Image 1: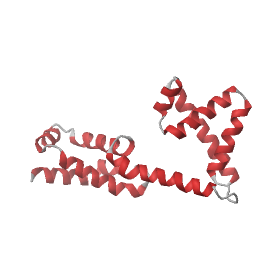
Image 2 (image 1 turned 30 degrees about the vertical axis):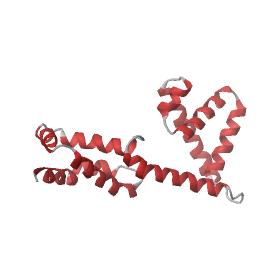
Image 3 (image 1 turned 180 degrees about the vertical axis):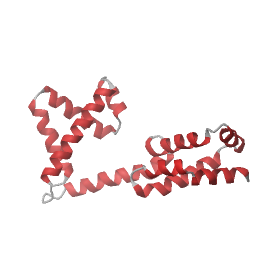
Image 4 (image 1 turned 120 degrees about the vertical axis):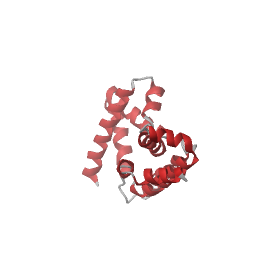
Length: 171
């Protein structure tokens, strides 16, 4: 019974709720919080009590939440976030089939295609960003091309900002 009270305390903890409050999209926050409680209930009670007595339980729980919310190899991602991401891609794909609708995906594809024709640097940026859209991971893209992660991140950030400006201007 002691562990149930401990998990209830974590469930109501201000730091935990602040962290969960930053997770996007918002509609997954309640599911994430419930899954967090289930994960903690699956741990050995003595281990949780030991972490609590060492003042490490909140930090541990935030780490668990981070893994659940952002890393693609865990059940929460596969059960909740992946469905959300895949649903968005499917929605954009369906919209792009309608020629009368100028959707952001079409604008982005056109812009990236034009970048390929400008020069080697622009083509480099277009290829990195296109591979990022495909792989959904900066680390995987940098490994795929054999380039530094920092460079990959900067290119993706710059192209993303370009696309945002282009889309805002045309939509």
